[in-house]
Image 1 (cartoon, one colour):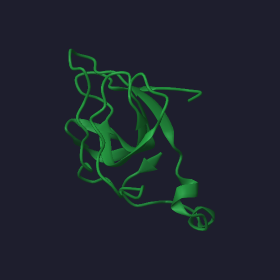
Image 2 (tube, rainbow, N blue to C red):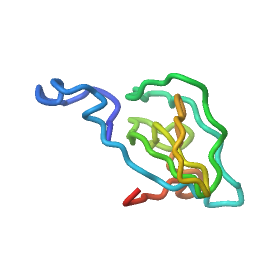
Image 3 (cartoon, rainbow, N blue to C red):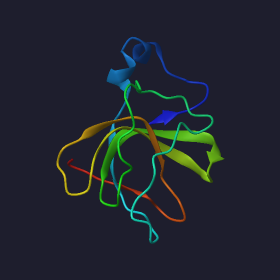
Image 4 (tube, helix red, strand yellow):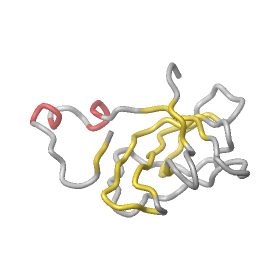
Length: 121
């Protein structure tokens, strides 16, 4: 996970490329209310993007989509949420194919949990 703000990394971590150090995590999108999905968010204030963002944003993810990326814990809430996912790629609901999601972010909470931890994906 990436904690935005002053980094306390050691020399060993600095010797690796950022891509090798980042831990990708996988989540399933499920809106807690009646919405059928969520629009992509832009970089939240205070976050320091860790992934290269080249290309255009894909269609917004619907409930059941699987998102992979880097978790950020922000020092202050943005849209009432301090935990955000910098999305690397996602698989639309019903698909097993992942597509790039450059410059796409998703908060973990909006009136309830949006992103649910997935294992084995």
